[in-house]
Length: 361
Image 1 (cartoon, rainbow, N blue to C red):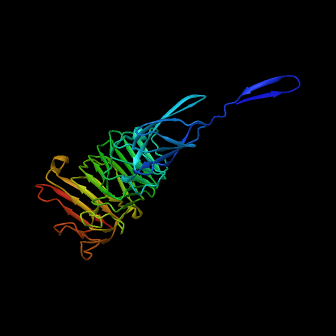
Image 2: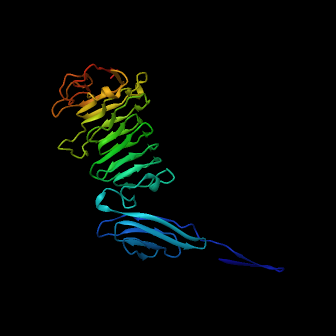
Image 3: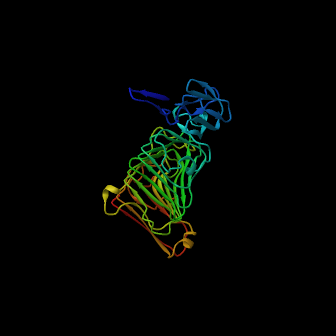
């Protein structure tokens, strides 16, 4: 825009660029085979869009009728601006709202969250997601995971969920996998993880800080420790492990198998010995905390003994298919964990001293 200013002594001409920064918003992030995906733009001239389908424009709205990755190029006075976005298949996540942002299957977090911080708007993740940076999700109640989606932490990576909810799309997603001493999972401040078939796997001395959050309607275990041989100072404090009537049936079952599984491990603590407020609540599931070991534990530990601590935890409605059985008691008498708040079984491990401490539970 050109502005000419004239007074009695002179005339001056100014050129002012009033062009806004190019932005787009998603009004419908997926295509269902009939209704197109739609993207809104703020540009005065429609941008160029290339991808699996030809874009049709109505004003500042582009409609797209195929699933896949699209490239947007907008030309302004400051040159060309190019970005990409993905149109998902609505049928893969029917509960997701129209304005959810979908990401291409099997992406990495460094590509979809390059700054490390995820958007707070609704998101849909699909496939095996490589967590290869430090990724944060804050205050996002609508993170949807398609069937069998899994977050896999790579070396040096962290996944942080703060006041956010990760849930399935009407089916189970697998969960989060941290396998290695340099991998960190943090789930805290009223976050919710639900609809996981395998849960959060903390393996080979990875670290977890699980605090003040809810694990709901997860099929097997919500958190599983495996091959933990060093003191990692992981924390499982003040969480609720539970289920409700909306749980997706899993092999006919409508409540979780257990809240926490500890397999072939040492130095694992659930709750806190000195602070009752840091204890967890386990309810409405077949078993509470299950501690197992196999002969391979002897090759993992530096000595022939281990120690597991279970402190200040509460158990309610822990039951078999029938009536509640011995809720809140330490039990190693059953052949199976159903109905046990705490179940410990190492089988035939020769020359091994297993120590599990249960206090104030």
